[in-house]
Image (cartoon, helix red, strand yellow):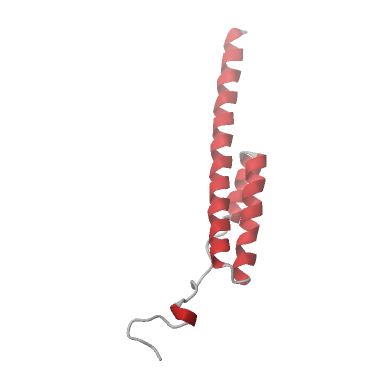
Length: 97
C-alpha cells in the first residue's frame, strides 16, 4: 500500500541515484604538485568512495568523499604556503649576497 507523496522503497527510503564524487583526480594532482602526506590521505579516502557505494554504505561513501575533498584542500593549501615561504626565503637570501 502506498500513500500519496510517499517515496517508493523499503520503509520509504530511496537510496541516492548516483555516488558522490570521489575527487580522485584532485587528490592525485595535489599529491604530486603540493603536499605528499596530505595528498596520500586524500587518495586513500577517494579510493574508498566507490567501494563503499557499491556495498550499500551510502553514508560512508559520502563521508569518504567529504574527507577526500578536505584532505585535497589541506594538501593544496600546505603546498601554496610552503611555496610562498620558500620564495620569500630564497628572495631574502639572494638580496643578502
